[in-house]
Image (cartoon, rainbow, N blue to C red; front, side, top):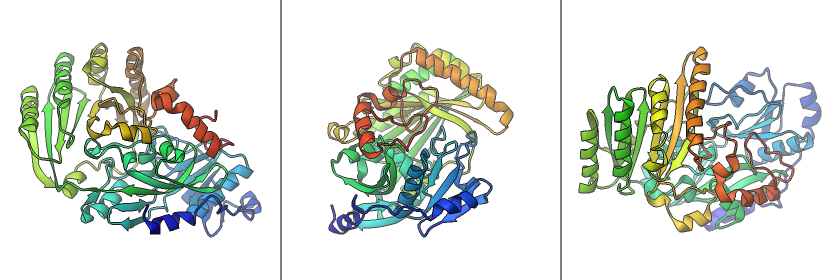
Length: 470
């Protein structure tokens, strides 16, 4: 590790015990706001409370007893100490994009990290980020230096939640998962101690895909960066007024075609009502193999558009999406190895999706350089053998549509469940997954329980699907 960075981390070693915020005890009993130099606590009724607890998903409504807006790592340690003294469950909010609202809770303490947005270059190839840095902010800082980390595409997502659950996006096939570039972390554990991890530490292993608010509060993340591609070429294909039979045939062919894509390419398939949409991006050379896939997809669909090779910074902005809170339901719909994994049930799924306005079924390509034996041993992410990841989505603006869409959503989920899917992506959780430890973490769950026992022995970081102490 770079010497300057090592010295900085050494100052935040486990020996640097947090100061207990004892002065807050009488203040919080009497007032709606209390603060130290490092943290501000808010109760319900304060405007800041509503803003700081808000999730990106407007469907989620939770009322924590307190929200702690932390200014730095010391403030996080003070907040954790307060939670320990009062036996309060703790939720951690960096970007607030957890699809089931696990970054908030009922009657507990929410640690809000929105002030931790530092971006600091350690050397020419290494950058240190605060957990609340948004992806658009990271790209704005890295791309002018011709560097990148393989994050997602949605502009408003915080890096903390993304990387600690794995993290994939348009360039994951080329550079690996987001967590594969993670080099070091600073974390406040469940006892209020400030700890660091790097290299092949057991905590480092757990933070690469298994630490979504499970063991502590990560306040700093150090990444190796990659040389950014100069351009991205995007192709969009659309098939209109599709029947279930036509969509099924296109999907089956898409699986065959994308299996041979080079790592520089990413593809996604989306069924939205009776329109089937396919995206293909390429940050590498436009080879004859890529052109073959483009030609085949043209023949399968009704309309093709192409952006040409755009500068990467411009191309990425086309996928930034909305940054304001929405009403939606979004969950993992399984990781697949091939079309045969869903062939027995895809007709039923398409029947429901095509008949339900506002619902989408999407399949994304993984594979490429995500498949790596060395990286697999270094990370808790268990699903590298699956080259495809799917998600189910539903969106609405009128609250009275929620019940119908959630009902249809669960119908599709039941169809998939009956097909025996055994892997789901933790960053797209669903409260209805019964066997979630196995689905999210596979054979790594018991090992993660041991990490939990070491760093959060009192289980203060707990929510509906948090890792349980063994």
